[in-house]
Image 1 (tube, protein in one colour):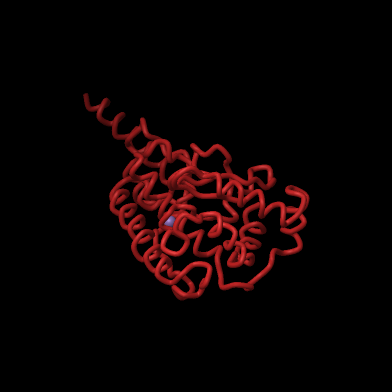
Image 2: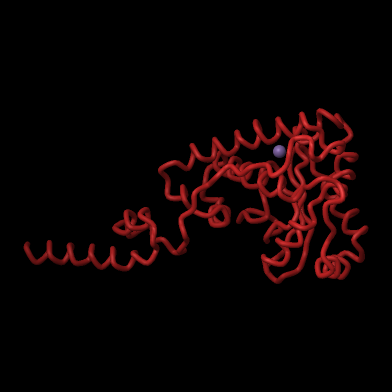
Amino acid sequence: MKQISIFIFTSALLLAACATPTSSNKSKEKATTVDTPLTEEYTPVEHIFEDLGYSYDALEPYIDAETMELHYSKHHKGYYNNFMEAVKGTEIENQPMQLIFKHISSQSDYVRNNAGGYYNHTLFWANMAPEGYSQPSEELKQTINDTFGSLDNFKKEFGNKAKGVFGSGWAWLVKQKDGSLAISATSNQDNPLMDIAEVKGVPLLALDVWEHAYYLKYQNKRADYIDNFWKIVNWEEVNRRFKEER
Ligand code: MN
């Protein structure tokens, strides 16, 4: 009997020892649960609600201040709050968003929608800036030319994809695993980092085509909102993501 308990104790120690490289306290707590092994190491993160980075009227006249205020302080904040509440005390609480999205199909629709809503808007704010702020880098322009024929043609194809979204969703410029660029669209708050995405990869450019993003100013003219987007794209940020995420 004594021998058995020693054996169990030793096994537990071994299990704990095997699991320690995964640094976070949460991983250590999980170490004795043999049927849920942690297969991916990560550095625990705090999910924060980032500053907008510019004033609500900075994107006028293409996106009005009232829309920006509502969109950022109500919609985006709402997704963030819901996400934080939903993951509190769960194993994904301090996981990087990329890792959460990689396994998003194992989460509830509620977590998926709010995680996406939180993350997508952070990207969206950052890839916009006041008119004339920046241009695509030579390197990015070259890759866009090689992929889509020209920058103008890329804008047309991206715009058409955005205009083709039925209901609520997003349009994306995605850098795929092999380094190639692709244009895609997702429904609701899904994004290309999610394991359920049709086109997977790192998002370089995001455009929100939910009604809440444009309806106050553009009403039913979603196409005008999409065409005007190019005037306020922060290419500097797109250049950075393109260079970094390879
Ligand atoms: Mn939105």
